[in-house]
Image 1: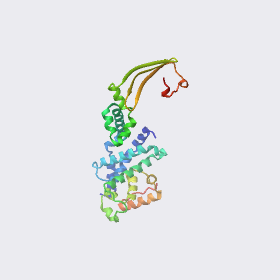
Image 2 (image 1 turned 135 degrees about the vertical axis):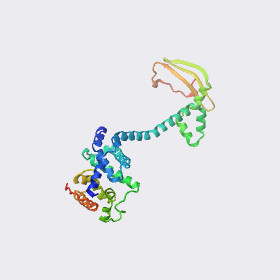
Image 3 (image 1 turned 135 degrees about the horizontal axis):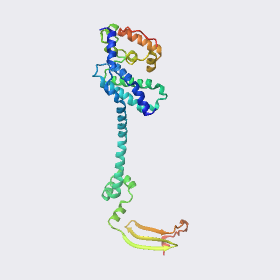
Image 4 (image 1 turned 45 degrees about the vertical axis):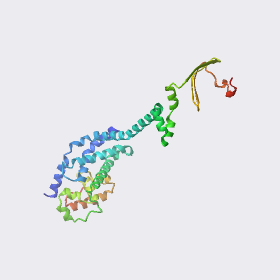
Length: 146
Length: 160
């Protein structure tokens, strides 16, 4: 076979297009989508983990206590925990019902209950009535409150 | 460039891209078809992701052809099938002559082989070949002459 015949044979061979060539677009876009999901997957996983950590820290006393004992996690837990101790106190009905209420200048302040231990006291309160301008509030030292 | 336009342009040159990849990989069909289609796929995917960086749409084919050439060369190096210019033992004209045409083309130094592939596999003119390879037209002509001489392929040389 001469070189010209070989070239002609090669040209004939090249004229046949592989059938799978027509799916370029489909394969390319599928690969793009796969790449996007690969990038998004860790973000979703991290978000789910963070959400679980925050939820558990605020709903499970056992989890909050356990995490609180782990050196590096305790700071993180403290940052995302609203107040597990308080939460537990309310859940276990460790509250003192006082049902106090006083009306002054059209505003009613109610204190339904308090929670107190050796270190702190939490007063639950609510107010209703006409809007009360802040500058009219009286500031008194606790010792001067009758 | 928008996605629709990108793929319309790809479709218009996909067969040429395929022939270029055949030129680089050599081998027998249909065994080599999958490798060739994979290389074209890879080049199109890379181009799709980088399409925002193409400054002028007029250079689309040149740009995509260069991407494909790089993909093919990278794949050949990865498979250690590449015989680079540096490592290619000096072959005499008679040695090329003794090989089948496809194998002889595959054994050509890379710079000569690229010219042959673009000219005779992709059916590009000498001007287009020079443009795709980013070389002066005179250089492309010299390489073509040298390659045809080594392959003992007596073809009418087109000036452009």
